Every structure is written in structure tokens, then in C-alpha cells.
Amino acid sequence: MPVEEVERFVDREKYRSFFTKELDIEPVRYVVILHKTNKKELKRYLHEQGYNTWFKIEDRRGEDISATKGTGRYVIPGWKKMIEYFERTEKKLYSKGKRRRARLVRKIKLFLGSRYAPTEDRLHLKGWKIGEEEYAFTAHIDHPNWVTFPFRPLAVLRAHLRRGRGDYESGTKMFYEDELKSVEEKYPSRFKSAEYSKYNSGTQSLPHLVQI
Image 1: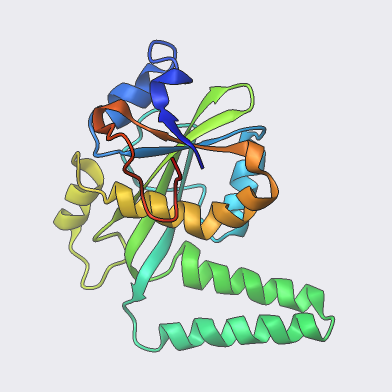
Image 2: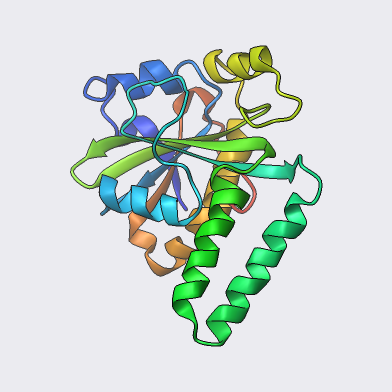
């Protein structure tokens, strides 16, 4: 994915909240631009990948799309084995041609293993519409999160509501590697990675994320 400065194709004056409420105040280094898509398509795809795309207690910043999913270690003993069992069952059902039952098992697996998973961390995406069929996404990892045990409400509030608390570099890399890389290989014209100018560093890039 080629790296270009965000300001080259996102008008600061026209999309002010994207800059003033996100890029200017958070440690954002990379922004992923998605072309030839729409809100409905994006939310459907993220939901199918195990993201929660509706109700969230969060710091809203004028984004058009917001989504989260659990990542990292499960904090409840035995939870990982349960999710692995659903994974095996899903594959077994598909191999036998029982697609309807396999889809049901997949929904349960995503619900418990990703969308509302009791994990140490959560990956959080925010997307702004920046054109007719264009969206700019930032991604960060929150630690701790709302389902971390033992629950620490003050720590969670600080992680969600204070500036500069999320891990944006790891979050962007995870978002690209987990959800977008395989799609980009099929539809390369729909993707672009932009480096925000306040962190412009010439030829530096995230491993496996961008090529200059």
C-alpha cells in the first residue's frame, strides 16, 4: 500500500472534525483509505468479521462508522477452548455440506469469541466519510477495556475518554493484516495508506503494512 500524506486527498477545512478531533490530538501515524465503498457495505463486512458495529460507550468524535472487537488473551479460563471447539464444528459442518448449521455456529463463535469476547484488549475502528465512495479509517487498541477482569472502571474510562491512550500503531497494523490484506490483494484499487504529516518520516513504514 503506497503511503501519501493525508492532506493531499483529505481537505482539512471540509472534514475538520477528522483532523481536530482525531489526527491532531491522538498519536495517529497511519490512516487507511478505502475507495469505492459505502457505509452499509463497510458495516456489513465488519459485522461479518466479528465486530460490534452498533451500541458502544465511547468518545464520539464525529465519525460515520465505529466498530470494536475483542483481541488478545481471553481472561476467562477455558474460553479459548470453547471458541476452538466452535471453530472445529463450523469447519466440520461445512465439509459435510450443512451450511445452514455451519453459519449458525459461526455466528455464535463470532458473538462469544470476538464481538463481545472477554479479552484483555479491544481493537477499535473509527471511519470518516471523505468523499462520495471514500472512507478514512483510524484504528487503535484499548487496554484495558469494558470486559477486562477484574473490572477497573476508572482505568477503562481513562483509556476511552483521555487523549493519547490508545495504541494506534499496533491497531492499524492489526486492522490491515486481519481484515484488509486479503481483500486488497483482490481489489488493490480500493485501498491506500496515508501517513499523517505531523509524523512524516520519509521512508519509514510499518512492517507488512506499507511499501514506499
